[in-house]
Amino acid sequence: MKDGTGKTRRDFLKGCAIGALAMGAGRYAFADGKVNPPPAASPRSKVVIARDPSLYANSANPDPARVEKLLDQAMQNFFQSPDPVSPWKKIVHPGEVVGLKVNTIAGHGLSTHPVLIAAICERLQQAGIKAGNIVVWDRTEDELDRAGYTLSTNSNRVRYVGTDGKQVGYDDTEFVAGGTKTRLSSLLTRTCDCMINVPILKNHEMAGVTLALKNMYGVNDNPNKFHANNCSPGVADLNLLPPIRSKFRFIVADAMTSCFAGGPMYKPQYAWKYNGLMVATDPVAIDYTASQIIEKKRTERGLNTLAQAGMPANYIAVAADAQHRLGTNNPARIDLVEV
Amino acid sequence: MTHSSRNRALLLPALSWLALAVALGIMLLLCFACQRPTASASSLFPDSAEAPGWSKAPEVRTFSADKLSDYIDGDAEKYLKAGVRSTSTADYKFRDKLQATADVYTFSSPDGAKAILESEPAMDAQTPALGDAARLFAQSLTFRKGPYLVRIVAYQDSPELAPALLKLGQAIGKKLPR
Image (cartoon, rainbow over all chains, first blue to last red):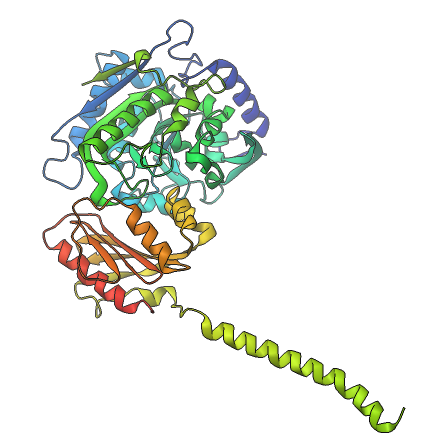
């Protein structure tokens, strides 16, 4: 069986196997298949946070020019690059179909901002990716629409599609994540060669925090089966699946508007403008950093810690443990750079 | 066996079945009478005549308890524990510029609505007289009335918003059956 890109089930499984081998332990892999940074040679993980206090100026929406500048600052610092396009050439290769997995469940109040996606698409095209080879996606088209994305399947333009869209759906292959059967979006398993994770920083009243790792709950067909026990070990188990580990290469997290309570849905009384973007290859390190941001804000607002409030972000430590090794949650091994 | 005793033997089982049917019918009627009054999803949401300044989008979406996570993801678990039965949601615009979403959560008892409202940090909320308890913020209003929890969230800020949210909340409150 072939999908729209001509890929067969055998191609998909072969790709998963190669990707899983290339990944080794922890962190996302770059376009050349090498893990970055290789765990044995470079046990540290880098997280860059770029912030601009004037990002929103006096508007309800972030300023597109400032968002683009912020993205460039974060990416150039992460890759120590003199120009804004080179970093993207290290992540993707011309000819690849690149997926951008956004998080849109909370509507346009608290979803990955379309203006950030526009900036990423611009840089990807400058790095040699054809517009039609960029797929912006989430689980449903209704959620994408409500978050402000204009759906499109035009192969000459950036595509905006949901897994529930026509001729998409979930792959027939059934995986087992921590004992729970699940199927993955065919956008991940077949359509796209690689993925960039573009989540949004939020509190989550079960997981404590949702960012890179939890964003994978929009990839499978039964996320509700992974919510038990504060989503732990559900989040970590799901992120261990070979298609996720082999295809996700980089994280650009939207931390422009966030929430310190009441998540993952938008409740304006708990939202605040953090005015930032976060980038990393290590999903555990960036989620650990996110948890510290949320905790700090909760303290400022006089709220209990996440654990005291019954929503400990335990999944982060589990994702770093010896059984999962998806990255590091050890602050001594995280190079946190704020620009 | 005499003719009359044979008739009695035939009649007794028939009467037993009749009595059983009557009893069942009475039980059904009692159950029906005891059921909480329910409203159709669209009738929970006022139109612009009932909530001046607000215009409702035509679509009303309803999620049963087992599908609630499709709408509110991980939040659903908390609502399920509190006994949510269904959720209906509609989009609104205030004076054609401010967008909002109104959710009506229906629980199996008032305790469920109370548990959810009280689980949320009150922060600096105003507490207008609306329903059984209400919290009004600059961009949102949450209140409960009987087994219903209503949440209205606006996506833009404006000085005129909070009083407008209260008006919409009052209009929804009037439509909730007791």
